Length: 312
Length: 267
Image 1: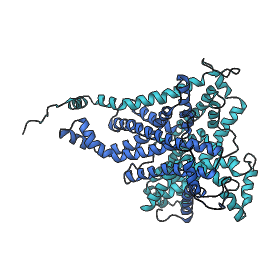
Image 2 (image 1 turned 90 degrees about the vertical axis):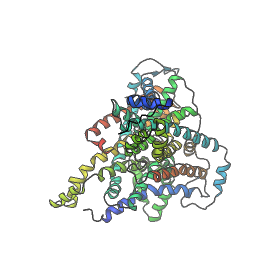
Image 3 (image 1 turned 180 degrees about the vertical axis):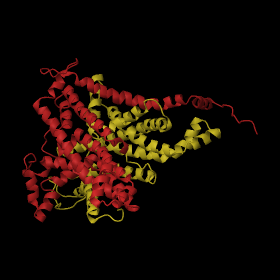
Image 4 (image 1 turned 45 degrees about the vertical axis):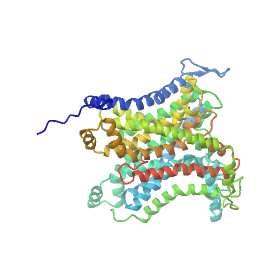
């Protein structure tokens, strides 16, 4: 046996290493402090500023923000026109989430259970590229598609199915001169943009469904559709809920899409943007921004109870 | 059960993928159209003149530089902060760990309008004038989580043994970081950086709240969408923006492919 080889500390770096070894908590603290300070000050600080701002009010005559505590601004949220905006946004977010779930399921199901080898990679890239590629470019592409003289109108004319578009545009609530100025267009673009956010968690959940369970279900005499309804769907549900957190939350806050495609009826995001910009009513804008936070908190609590976070 | 997918399922899956990809192709097509006032399909004629027109438009270059500058600085900051956070969170268990991981995730989990409005409120209350740095402040905040996700996945896969081996062979903490940890983390960090760059270069929602009168390339595009001038020029710029996000994403994918932590799962 030789003596333990303890090398003499040669410099400050070596001595510091010794200190880290003896006190691992110190190293941990040094590592976590910068990101924590950044997020704590910049992000949480800003959220606090948002809350603070929402308790201020605006002087109706001078238009100056009065920096004293009041609940007046929150009370304004309950005016009929503002409740309308909130309701419209929630209805849109719900519709978008449901449509995304229906459209995403076959893609996620195929990718999780049948795609192998190069097809698996193709499906993965096929979902990931649209997820990450430029948001604004994607919205713009849909403006081109939905325009009256655009490709959809051209295709409908060529195939004699123009009555379908006219039919949609004559439904009360969805009226517009073309799909690009109808709320249905807004809905389509929302679904397109957020669809990948639904596919990925759904696929992750479906990949975790063990094959043995499906075989057991078949052995016990279940038909394909029975297996689907009673085994696959309940096991995939946490993934669907996880995906719906994204689609719901993103639709609640988005303000670019309703501005570019649709009849410019107001959604929460757009209202926040207009109030802080042209109207200069920062307190009311802040109060409006608190609404999606509250809705998402309720949503997240419900999702947590359904076990959605295991699928994230 | 696993044998073969039914034709209905195959069609629905393939149709879904096409639905995700076909719209983007139109952007390319319309960059070559001779029609500049409407989105007529099929285009009445084809020309490559719009690339030259876009090149000579003086109002495009300053937003492009600003976007590049903001994305570069934000990515750098996010890489430093995200890596530090991942190093701390990868193995250690401590009080408040779950809360910290939620805090890192929050900036992209909540809608951008909230992050934007929050920063706007803070700037308003503290009388901070808008500048490049106010944009960077927002971008770096939501980019941290992208780098963090990539780095922490790689660190979890890394065997703790090699760090101990390095220490046993006499390396101090900094040498271990330089010669052992960094080469192993390299591609994951690069992938995270690429994704962060793509996200920042393209971001518009938070930026509209933190930019004031400044114009990044996405903000320039947004203005053109609301009040179009030469529509095909917007398409040319859209292709540039698309390429500036598409290429980094592909690189990120190839850098991390094959691992359990393939980049992009955590946007």
